[in-house]
Amino acid sequence: MSDLPTTCARCDSTGTIRVLTTSPVPGAWTMYACSTCTYSWRSTEAAYVSDPATYPAAFKVDPAAIAEMPVVPTVPPRRA
Image 1 (cartoon, helix red, strand yellow):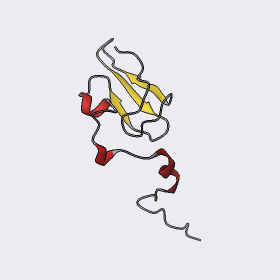
Image 2 (cartoon, one colour):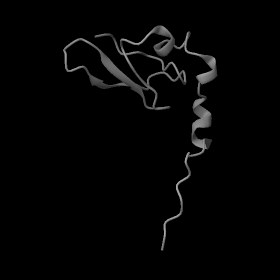
Image 3 (cartoon, one colour):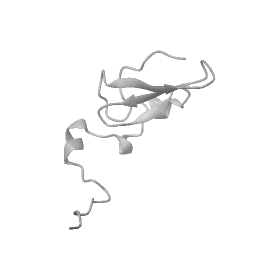
Image 4 (cartoon, one colour):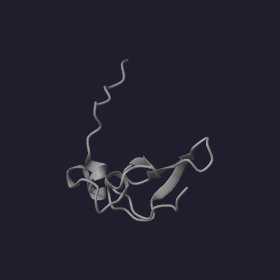
């Protein structure tokens, strides 16, 4: 439906967007995903969801901090 976005709205990474899937109805929507922060959205979403300039700052993610983020919930140790 639309061209592949160049920048992730959530983490501002460039060149990391891929097509995740497309609508079963040809041309209805395309779903994109960022390989840096795993954010995903459809081509039909509002600008505040898909445009880096209007994505809410409170929900932005720093790509450098992703590796240090805790896994929630914590995976318990394996039982013997």
